[in-house]
Image 1: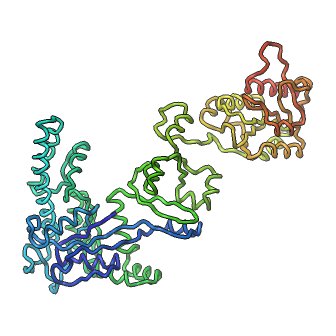
Image 2: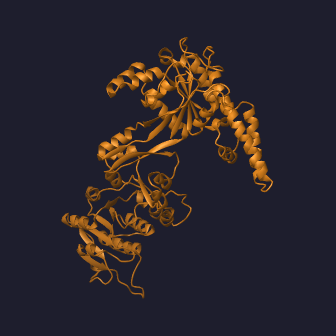
Image 3: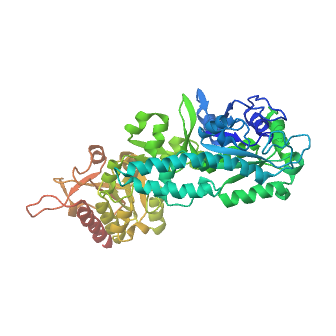
Length: 545
């Protein structure tokens, strides 16, 4: 990002530039001290980046940067080449936004330049702003008139240019009235046409109201500042109260604690540089995103609302072209978790993925680019399920779902288990449906009543259940034990295998009993939810005595 610092001669541009960049540009109280634009690169302060670097100890920490350009002072007639006009206008054209320094202090020792570099007149902030605005407007008017001629000529061969010619004619009338392109009222489509002209008076602007120390201390009551603030509000621009001389003093303090004490004495929380950077980010609609790694922690500047593939393109163009997915977590969540790994564990990392993957996950193209994977209720621990059964004085009855991937099946099992009086459901974290909205809907509300534990390793959980006296009953076609011969009156966990492959090998090996459901028809298998219902209600029958 490049910000051009502009203003009439002797308003404090170079003093402010020196203070915020420490670039050592010459400054003096006579006109045209700054002839060639001085350039300074400033790191964007970001406490988030500092904290990230503390966490990961990278080889390099790279902040976002802003380029400040101190542009030579301008006088009336610059658009016709007066003073350093042409050079001034060209330097402004290369910037992303304008920081217009406006003199808001009285000092008889410093010449106030308006129409004539040799004329000293009272301080007039609105007049100063108007002088520069008019020169920018006049330069733009010349450009717009050329665009009208060009569009009118092109329209003879292609009628689509007729509208473009109309837009620029309307803009020319607006400029002729002494109003900047920023205040030109038009729709989004016409605005896009106007923006193709690279107009000077269209650039976003921050008015830096430069005051002396006394004026800055009570700037809300400073009449010059009030003038600039009121004008900025009308234009939709930003205004920044600042004292360039104080900023010089702040810049000379290397010790952070000394600097903080100095700012506290002034009654401000941030230096002028920090406030200027904040203003410029807001003005241009910019944000920073952070990346981390052993090699580098870095801040990247992007437009607010930039999508993940385009943000990745800021790092390298190949990342945008071959974009697959991005893991994103908010700074606050990362700090609360302590690490990215912990954030992943808690499931609060947002994954930005290719649209084709989203289409597959949603099973419909109408997801609008966003899919949230969230449990419809909070998961519980296996032990809490066992404790709840003990509190009721009942032998635990659990349902263990081994990789049930269909949310409709899981919802149906939940519904049956709750109706049968089961104490809880256990599902694995991997290769299994979770407590999604579909599961909640299919369960007919049972998910609100039946506790569900989500575990990393089913095999380990089964072993632990057996240690606590729970018998494990697995369902398998062709098992030697008939369902109706099984004893389900005591502590029991019924394992339901996946829809296609049944129970996994390790889960089956850790079952105490493998039971089968009698099949009398031609089809030798049941839906997983139907099988669960049969086993659960056999347990209900047996427990009733």
